[in-house]
Amino acid sequence: MAVATGARLALEGPVWLADRARWLWLRALGPLAKPLVRRRELRVALAGTSMIALSFAGAVALPMWLLALGPVVWGTPHVLSDLRYLWVRPGWHRRWALWLLVVVPLALATLTAHPAWGFGAAIGAIVGARGSLARKSLALALALALLWVALAYPALTAVVFAHAHNFIGVAIFWAWRRRAGKLHYLPLALFALGSLVLVSGALDSAVLALGALGTNPGGLDVYYHLASLSPGVEGMLGVRLVLLFAFAQSVHYAVWVRLVPEEDRKRETPRTFAASLRALRADLGPWVLGAAIVVTLAVAVWAAWDVFAARNGYLRMVLFHGHLEVAAACLLFIEGMRPRESTEGAPA
Image (cartoon, rainbow, N blue to C red; front, top):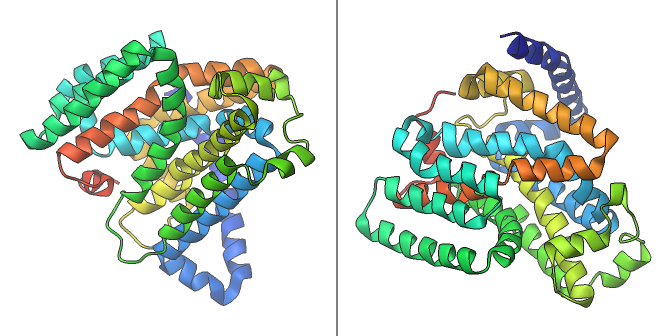
C-alpha cells in the first residue's frame, strides 16, 4: 500500500502541471482549439503526423541517441499500455485458460529469449479463442509455420520479429476502431512514406553529412546496432535497416503511449491527464501502476549510470510484449472483433 500511495503522490504534481500546460496551450490557440477538442479524428491525425515527423527527423539526425534513450524513456509506459489495452481491458485476464495457454509461453519466451515460445503463445491464444473453426484453422496454419521457422532459424527469426513488431503496433492502431472519416490515413501514409524513404537510400548522403552515425552513447554505436539489427547485411543497406528500426520503434512508442489511448475512449473530447491517471489506476490497480512507476524510474537511474546496460536490461526484461501483440491479434481475429470493440464492456 505504501508503494502505491507513494506512486500516486509522486504523480499528482507533474500531472497537475501537465494539465495546466495543456490548458495554457489550448488557450493560446484561440479559435483553433475548439475543433481540436471536439474532433477526435482531427486530434489523432495531428498528433500522429507530428510525432511521426519528429521520429523521422530523429532517425535521420540522431539515430544512435534515439535507439539508446527511446527504450529507457518510453519503454515501460508503452509496455504498460500494451498490457492495459491488449490484455486487461478486453478481459482476457479473466479467462484462466488463457493464463496457461498464453501467459506461461510468454514468460518462457522472456526467460529463454527463444522466439519459438512467443509463437507458442500465439498458438495458445488460437486454441483458447472463442470463434469459428475456419478462422482458427487459418490462424493456426500460419502460427505453426512461424513456429517451425523460429525453431529452425531462431537467431534470424528474432531479428526479423524485432523489426516486424514495430509495424504490428501500427497495424493494430489502423484496425483499432471503425472510423467515420479518413484523417487517420494521414499519419499512416506519412509512416509508410518515411519507411520507404529510409530504405530506398534517398537520404544516405544527408545521414553521412550530418554525422548521425558517428555518435556513441554509452557504447551503443552504429556497429553494435548493425550486429543486432542487420547481421550479415553489408554496406549501406544494413545502415538503412538500423535507421528504419529507429524510426519505426519511435512511432511504435507513439502509437501505444498517445494514439491508442485516444482512440479507445468512447468520448470524442479529451480527458484531463488527472482523469487519465485515475482511469489507468482503475484498469490496472494501484499495485501494477506503482510497480510500473518504480521500474520506469529505476531504468532511468540505471541509464544515468550505464545507458548500455540499462537499455539492454530493459529490452531483455520485456521480450514478451511483442508476442503479446501477436497473441492478442489472434484472439481478436478469431473472435471477430476490432480492438476497440473488445474493450467496450470494460470499466473505464
